[in-house]
Length: 124
Image 1 (cartoon, rainbow, N blue to C red):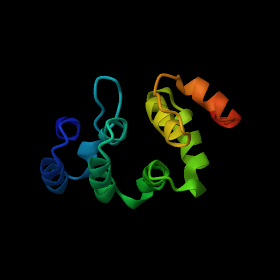
Image 2 (cartoon, one colour):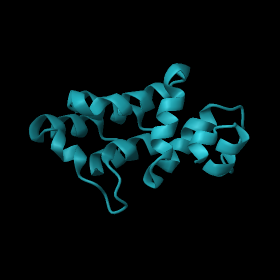
Image 3 (cartoon, rainbow, N blue to C red):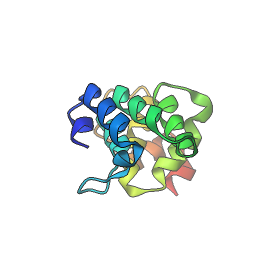
Image 4 (cartoon, one colour):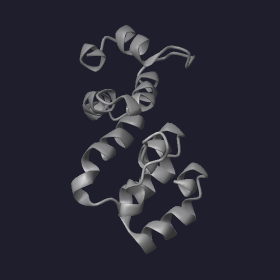
């Protein structure tokens, strides 16, 4: 987690190579995994490192989030619904919604953004 928060990419790779992906499943005091923290902090390089070390059975939705953040519209809705379904992921939902609009500001809440952009499933 410290390597992820500090964007220490070499350290992230070394720790994951030496100790395995289980280290990336340890949550911080807010219950967030290093992957969620990397996405929230716009540390996409760190998120890719975590994804590269992730077992295949866990990669599907995390890959979707990264692709949605880089504007792959085909999977945007699926990624948005997955992040909106859990409160600890709402910052990521907000990032996805902000990227989906031409808004210049980040001051709207995730609820306001989802409402304004007509994503009723995400609101639910």
